[in-house]
Length: 300
Image (cartoon, rainbow, N blue to C red; front, side, top):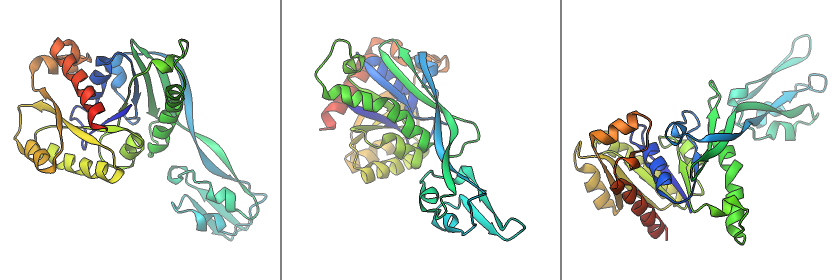
């Protein structure tokens, strides 16, 4: 069961829900895909055991082979490579790595085979354990402008092992077979990074707050879920503040409100201290367990 936790805007409590949901389960695999600003490790405090650099492929031009024909520039849909003809050397090829989407078209279609793809570091992937939670996250290098490639690599780092283990007969020495749930903490918003994170999920929990801003961005997130055909439900954080328009919207749209996290000082204090809120009282832990059971039921 792969459950992603998303929100239309930042600051709604998405990571709070994802972390405490994982901690409420017997075993969980937690994947923090908010690679531009990962913070789940602050609450889970994992013991990191593996670390590996993440790369994308960008073009490198051999000036001795290049004839400056311009084919590479013509086939690049992202204007990441430009050819300036003329000059003493017959021309110049400019590569803009931050615009490159690593499609490989320039290297594939260069008639002189003057372009090869080289690795460019974009961040790191780290993995470890936090009690009963297996933890993986990515950290995008400061200055990099595209996070989806790293998000995909973070998921590819661990999810194939999870899926393979689930498809085989249980084995006592296969730790991934013990995982009962995958929790993906998605980036905030509704753009490409979110889609890269939630794609392939069995269910998505949308976290919102009962305010006009929360409602506006929830509506955008709902459109994304419907476009991707991913079953979803809503968790209302800071319940008790704002208005009732989120409830009315969900009722009109037949969207289930699966859980409400009250606006309470003790919860806010634990969050501000970097501590899980399920330790505030036993009822919250049971509420998160019930939330997961509802996810299983609604996912069909």
